[in-house]
Structure formats: structure tokens, C-alpha cells
Image (cartoon, rainbow, N blue to C red):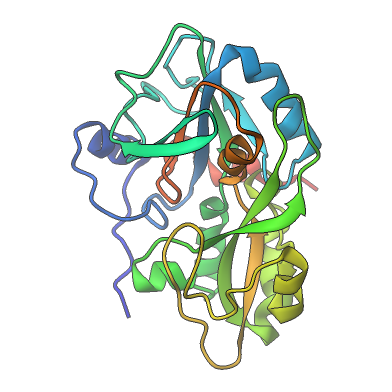
Length: 272
């Protein structure tokens, strides 16, 4: 069993990204107690459409905030002294809806009309799972979480359409009610699972039933007596960019390599 990652402050983790010292395949587990965010950087021309996409699809696209057009500073209430061009471990590059490459920074890509959006991430609720003895398998193995494209359509908005992405964590069938209960209040981090087990995989259109062939992230291990449990995933906007063939250059975080915010997890919990 892998040793859990050492806890880091969000500021330390972002500085490691900025100085190119980050080497882990994922940010999962490294900043317990703090919110992690998916990132999408688009021209301001598409910003209104993307906000609408988030409103219409709150499970996969829970919007936490955005930058002002042309200003790479992350809003200070999310992360102090953070520059979105440098503070993510790795970025994806898309051109006219096609994946081009990964880059270490957006220093040469940020434009006067660039807007960065920050979407909630399921890594945020993993501390609560760990606290209840439900350690996510990818954290145990020191890997990235497996993620899958699905056949579930998004409610379209302007130039954006496409299908939902899900992340997967295996758990014993008997633990499912507890897993659902723990994650349900984290509505700004995708909330409770959207599907589970073989029937759930079929409903999502997933054919990889043993967790060894994810579309994004790393393979996992589904052990005897366990089922696959699926959550809506914030890589969905990037799949939407590809499905929709969005024109121009668009950027995202590399799946599993998140922007870690100064926002505490209690600030994204559903208040009863």
C-alpha cells in the first residue's frame, strides 16, 4: 500500500507548480481541507455561453468563479497571489476542438481576451472519505483517478454541447450508502455519485468494467466484492470543447492536475 501523500498548503503547492518542482501525477490528497478546481481558459467571446453551460449542467460543471478578461490573477477570495498562467501542474491545449499538446505554463498563450473559469473538483470531498476509512483507491496506489467519457448528453449552451465525463472510485457494495451520504453535501464538488455497478456503467455507456482502460487518468484496481462508483467530473468542459469543435485555442488543466485554492472545503458544502 502506498504511503499517503504529505500534506501541503495550497500556496506551497502552487509555488511548486510555478517553479516546476511538481512531479506527482495528480494533486489528489496533497492539500487536505482545501478546495481543488478544474480549469478552462477560453476567449471572452465564449464566456457567456460557458456560464450558461455551467448553469444548465451543475453536476459536472459547478462553477466556483472566473477571472476578468485578460487578467490572469485568480480572484483573491479563491486563491491569494495566484496566477492561472503558472499555478497548475500541467495544461492541455486545444485548437479548433482538437487536443494538441500539454504545456507547463500558459505564459505564451494568455491573451487580452482570455478568461479562466474554475469548476469544482471531486478531489475536494476525498478528505471526508479518508476520514471515514474510505480511502480512494487512486490515493492508496499513488495514481491519478480514472475518468471516462459517457454517452450522457449535456444540456447545450451556445457553442458548447457534448457529453459528460465521470470519475470512478471502487468501493464495496456495502459501503455505497455511506459513500453517497458523505459526498452528497459537496454540491460544488460534483456531489454524490451519478451511477454505480455494472448496470450503472451500461447506462453511462462505459465498457471498461475492470477499471484498466480509462479515457483519462490512470488504471485502477477493482477488487473482489467491490463495484465501480461514478461521479460527474470537471473534465466535462474539455470534452465539450472537443465534442463541439470550439474554434480557436482553448486551454484546460491536465486531467487530475488541479488548481489548488485557498478556499476551505467547508465553504463548498451544502448548508442545511
